[in-house]
Length: 114
Image 1 (tube, helix red, strand yellow):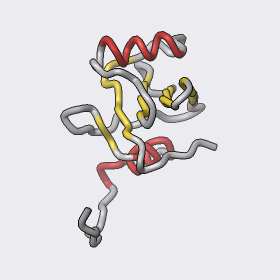
Image 2 (spheres, helix red, strand yellow):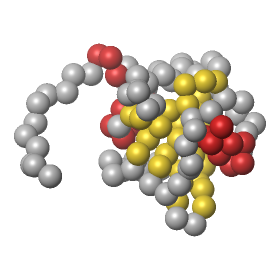
Image 3 (cartoon, helix red, strand yellow):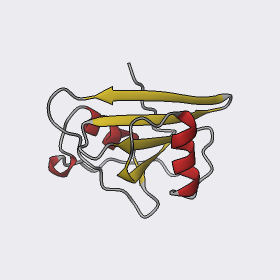
Image 4 (cartoon, one colour):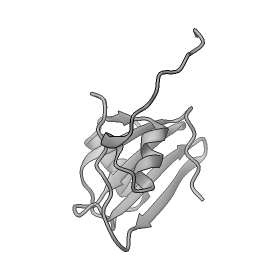
């Protein structure tokens, strides 16, 4: 079971990824294409051309973890991101569940001042 925590930062690679890439290939994409240094508390999301496969690269303090999922039917939605390619944990969770995020409406909530 994959756990997505709101305290982590989630980045989507907007291009298409060859799903044969493993840890080194995916970290190379992060460094060369996203111009980021993958590290702890960061998660990178990659889709194949048909958006039927997803790989999620987790940066941890002592290395990387990789989550890989292939759909038997349907496709993943390419999420809308901010200017830096970042999305929320909630959006990632909805996409992995097959929910179209454009149709989701979020109600206003009170937030404590930080």
